[in-house]
Image 1: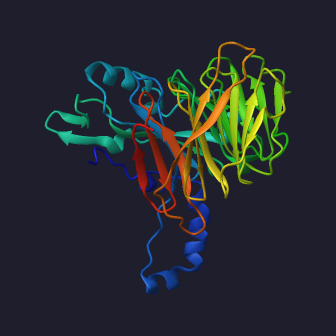
Image 2: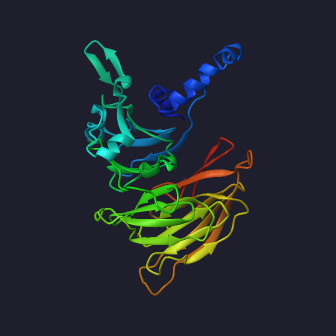
Image 3: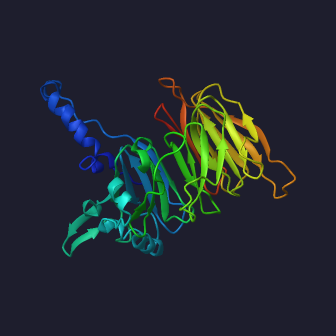
Length: 359
C-alpha cells in the first residue's frame, strides 16, 4: 500500500533556476499553448536516497536543479525528535559560510507548506506531532544528476555535471552548510560521486576514470589515486562495505571491478549484459552484487571478499532476474538492495518498480 507521497515537482517549480528559461519559452508560445490547452510538465525525479542512519528518518530527492530534503515522519517518538533536531538548521534556510559555495547553491525553506492550522496554531503534520514532508530545498546552478549520503547520515554530496567548478558540492544537513571542494574540474565533467565507507575519501567519476580525493587534506587538489577504467562512459559507481573494492558500470556493456590494494587498473572486467549497464550495487550485509542493464535483466553475483589479503575476491554469477519491459530502448534503470534482507528493488523505463525476495 502507499504510505506517503509528495509532489516535489510542484514544490520546487516556484524557485527552480530552470523556470526562468521555461518562462521565456512559454511567453513565446503563449498563444499556441492556450489554444492547445497545454499545462506545465512536471520536473522528473532522477534520484532518491534514504538516510543511512537508522535514527534519521529523512530522504533526499533530486528534482531538476534542486535537491529536496524530506522528513518522512515514519520514526517513533524518540527518532522523530532526533530527525527534527537534524533538520532544524535546514528549516531556517541554512547557513552557507563558504563564499564559492554561496554562489553555487542556496537553501530554501519549505517547512511552512507542511503545517496545518489548528485551534492552538500551526502544528507540523506527523504521527508524533513532529516534522513531516518537504522541509527544505537546495537550489543549484544546473541540473542535479547524483546525490549520495555519507554513512553517518549528516553529510551528502551532489553532482551537477554542467555546473563547471561547482559540479561537486558537499553539504552538511545539521548545520545547513555547503562546501565547494574543487577549484576546477579535471578529466572531464564529473558524472558521479560517493563517499568512502571507512576513510575520509571522496570518489568522483568522470566519463572514463575515477579520482579518489582525501577530504581532510583539501589543500592538495591532486587526487590520492586515479582509477583508469578503460571504458567509454561510466554510468554507475559503488564501493564495497570493506572500502577496499570499487565496482563501475559502463554504457559499453561492461562492469569493471577494482581492488584498491592492487593498483589503478581493473582487477576484473565482467561482460554479462547485451546493452548498456545502468546501475551496479553491493549489498551492505550479504556477499551480493547486482547489475541492471538496458537489456531488461538484472544479474545477481555472489561476490565474496576475504579478509585474507592473499586470496582474491570470488565473483560468480548466480541468478538472472527478468520482468521489466524494454521501453524506447531502455530497460532496467536502477537497482537497490534492502539494507538487511537479501531483497532487491528494481526500477525500469516501463514505469514499474519490482521487489525480488530471497535472491
